[in-house]
Length: 385
Image 1 (tube, rainbow, N blue to C red):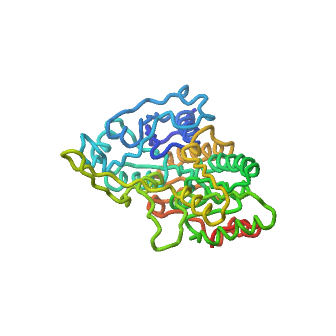
Image 2 (image 1 turned 120 degrees about the vertical axis):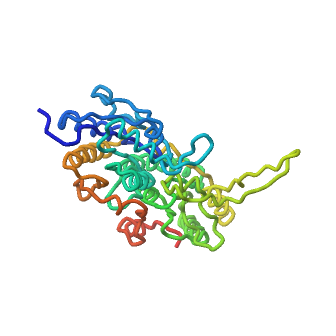
Image 3 (image 1 turned 90 degrees about the vertical axis):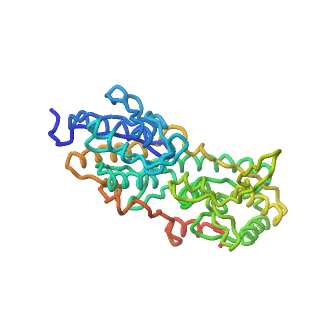
């Protein structure tokens, strides 16, 4: 017999970039809500845009059967922001429409699965629209504060580690430097963990400014000791530490949830025929620039591998499946208890509620004296500083 709860219907959506673990989380929320508390579950399609456009689906038990091992999200996702949504070529505040649809659907609480941007958007819905929300921390970058880990991160670390493992063989065979770029625009957890696990000789992350001259010296010292190859793991937001360093693009910022960033790439104007065409200058990716400059400094052939969206794909790891199940079941328990406007955080093996005000905005960055950094230094890893 289902437990009684004042909450009769919940909505659930996935927002931001996809990542492994979304489907296991949807499954955990749905099964717990229906079988334990007798709640109806409405799936919102394609993130916050689906709520604004009233695109929903009633989630039944059979819909979540077999999705534990599937990557991506059965609900679809988008990066749309309810307070700044493009509708008919105009940017509009669509929070009132989202609120009206939630009321029409009789949704008592909205469960939002997403990263930093989603936490902020959920808080806006709660503050400006009065919608009761509960969020789950999702990001392969692990850059959400107040939680030990975000789901999707463990899977991405495994994928990046396997890539670095494979790069070792070709780097050894050709005596090359290979630069492997991971995601991580503001936070270097993914590059740090996969670099450490994969035995990268150099790890470059946003939190530790690097000097390429120091990196080149470390690589040449390896050569002098008979090591004819080197692997460099670099986060996409690695910090050159110079005043004239290129600013990260807005594309990278939005990728990680910082939706209010502004594109800093130079705008070029060119007259074509009778019209004036404006476009953003294409900036050289950081991994490519590092490889090119290191090849010049060391005289060693260098190559680049950018993992990109490969890190988001595929089946979730066992750890992420378990984590999502714990987070999802706890989220529904909190809703049934009447505890809203919180994120379900994972701390020391337990799932605990954290006020959204404490989560939305700050970035979980790697402390420069973190034990993982210290361990990497002790085995000879260079951070370019």
